[in-house]
Length: 383
Image 1: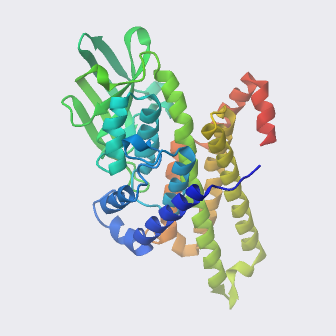
Image 2 (image 1 turned 180 degrees about the vertical axis):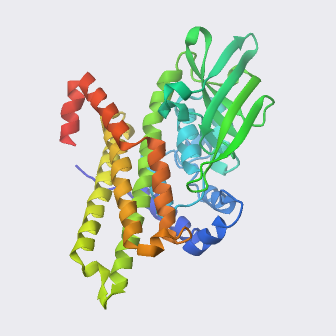
């Protein structure tokens, strides 16, 4: 079995690394954090020009025609530089389901604009991880010439900058449906929300008698849950990819710091207690990486990956917390400085963890899943 990436995959990874490294230096990010901007439009433009926004877009629509593995490699590199661009929401939350379930017209309209950098996309799926008592929903009423949508969706990732949002709704007789909503259309109200962790801008979405045509329907009536389940697995794996980049870079920076920083004339890294903490961080990072790679591979091969995705999510939540806390602690007072680079990695790691759900929730859901299917339990033990 060959565990190596292909030449094309390595080339994409190297290109993404070069672009993010050249643009999002520590000095640039510090100056950028002092502005009112949330995302770097110049970086977004560069990613489009170099073909990275269209890496998973079919060639006939202006992309490279690759897939989830290549997308995750780009997200890893974004995580390493905590680069301020809405890649996960545009490329995975909306780009992938449109590419999989959309009509040829929808693909041409939305994926072509995504690949060229002319449009930003997202999906209103945050309710899936919320307590049922606070979940909101959208009701879709079918009419002769289209649909009328009413309702709300909370905390839409990157909703404040999105041009189009994939919105789950409840259709006729309770059948789940999905729509692609133009945020500039009459009846669409967006309230920007500053998540407060790393400058990310979400939005609360409200639809007031929004009229859309039949061409706005993604997939078929009643297919909404299937699309949502398909999307959630890939969205979670994409967040794990980001987490690998964030935690590995935080670990490397911390290792370099304690090697150079001296106390009583001795490098901090020579103290056994600190060396052991760094060793634990290394084990945690590799745990996140290996479980996420397994889930990513199974999804890319069209295999059942429900248990593997849950396991990867648990590692990305539980282990990431230990890695970034260690990074801050071993930096001492510097680690508490909100303008010092290591703090950005702490904030991004926590944002990803909260988006995935906490570790105990993942264990509970994984346990329920394994209890339902003994075969999944044996497969999980192999991991």
